[in-house]
Image (cartoon, each protein chain N blue to C red):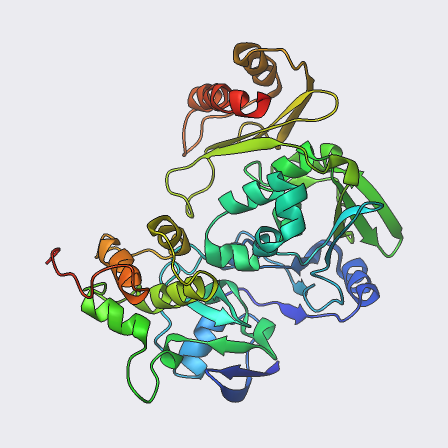
Length: 160
Length: 272
């Protein structure tokens, strides 16, 4: 089936097999490999992308379902001026170790901050409950979000 | 995915129903896809036709009126339930269950209708729908019928729905508005893992109601429980209605124990 969709503001028209997931379409057909495949079952959140303004697990969306949709991936996060504020805060707070969960984690944080500009720790934890991180223990990620929302120190390094 | 299928995204209900009638059990409706697509990937589901219902007009309609109560289109997502102010104010039990369902990304995609059509014994949304006397509107090329959720579930992953039928809408009567209650769900990690056991207590005109998930082949409702009963007596009634099994998550004995524990914990909050 031929589909047309925009990804990070760029329009693409491609043929997509009906059984191909949006995740594999982004990675294999568009070469956007920032979106990761972890479990492939909608559990780990490594494949998180925005679909029409809301985060979804792209492993649980068919590419053909995204016909006409607007997608945002981690590749759209940094602008011409460099990293986004969320990305900078992750960097400052050592919220990245192996980096595999980071694209999804950052998009989940972005979704949270659109709705709740100054989230509590509890709200942060709930917003990232669908994103597995096996390196950081999550503490530095929570601190990065507190940092970027002006509720915590800039780049506390006492975990390292 | 290895399994190949044909994808259809009908733009009208009649087109969808015609596809369902034509292809019968070889067609599967694709709503949020958070169950169907992993199942296809794992080889558990092998539909020849995948019929996407999200392009139907009014799929995500969510309206309340004192005359008709709450009407939820089949495309209403779990997140939409959580965002809806009328639901939060008038049907808080729906929001409470929605909040416990999976993770943020899944809630953005999964639908209330899909959650009940899958008919998992651990369905989160089944419990408030049972407590609130909700009905499912089932349509097919041969007509429309409404089925109370008390009769809807027939076994694990089994419902009264016939091949070719489509759950078009869920209705919650206006008379169920403002029913108070509480929900507790046992799980290892919020956002992941399936429920080990879930217990919802709710008030109703004829007495206390207790709805239980993951403790029988279907979600269970015990209604008409006398208001004055203490937690031990309520638990005794509920224990007679459930039939938990030992499985990979825990033993039947532990499920029975936790149902009682949650009743003891929640009853004082609901009786207040």
